[in-house]
Image 1 (cartoon, rainbow, N blue to C red):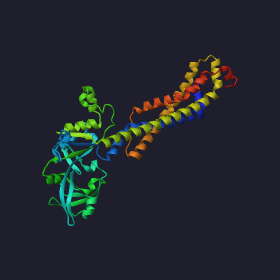
Image 2 (cartoon, rainbow, N blue to C red):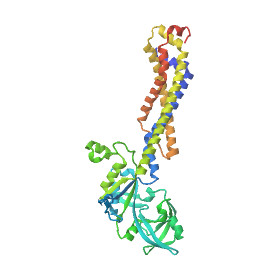
Image 3 (tube, helix red, strand yellow):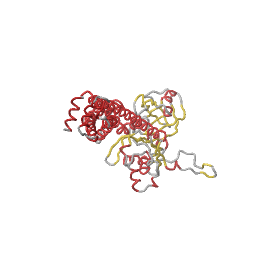
Image 4 (cartoon, one colour):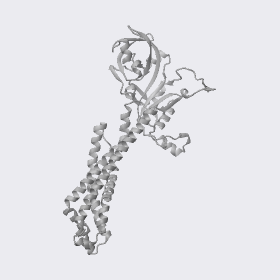
Length: 421
């Protein structure tokens, strides 16, 4: 009898039920899309932000030591110590190696440049462009083409094993150089492979393969600093803790989380006598952008669910008002408040299940569309999301129906049977 009453309710009030179902579907679809994107957005936003440069820099440990006596800094005014180029492949051996999208060593050298029209001292920056490296059986490629994708070259990129160089566009303009010209650096002729435009200091410099800078400096195998681009998660209380003060369980959790601090710690382990630190402005901006986007998605989700609950409330209130005679008759025949409430809540569960399922699949399609449009990649939908969405649909439907069902339970059967509200 109970199920028949539920069936007749859906059969006789199709329009009301459809309106309530559509409201649930739309609210749940938006919630599904926002939750799916929010749970999969971290790496995608990090990859987008990686196009704006490295977020970690590795320098010799000696550079962090300040020697002061009586307020006077006695650190010698030199270029500092150097890292060993042979240690660079070890970066791929760290725990979070797959989160490191690229790294580029840097070795700045001051040298004399001579062209047919001018001659002066300039900075030559040695680096990897797209260097093939090997760690064990793994081959990989890294360099500024991965860490600095905004660098634009008119002409061609030099090979890392060649003597070709890039000349910054402002320096090339003052020296009247074009791709294919020859330029003398420290008495050796080099072919200009391309003109480099970065919008930074490199526009006034010569950028060459790392081996060229090492040869001019007379320090083969030396690296001044390493810029590392890594996918990280925003800082929280655990990220800011000192690993030396952690117990083993907390340390393992910190070490196995892709915080910029833990990745920096692992870089120091991999490269002897080094100090790694985050480029503070870049790392903080990543966390701020990610937090704000996720906050915006949460607000959109809550607004959609609230609007859905209001629409369900209006539809259920109208449906119950139209059925006040039925409610009054059930009470007159001995039906208790619990059985009447159970009838309407059962209808709400059916509505939530139908609307939630439909909304889930619509939301999945919407999430994939957002992923393709904004990130040009597929959004990964976790299987656990479906039961969560159904639970949300049931909660929203119950919240929207509660007030109307309460009025039905408190309805006086005498007035209801006489057609009075």
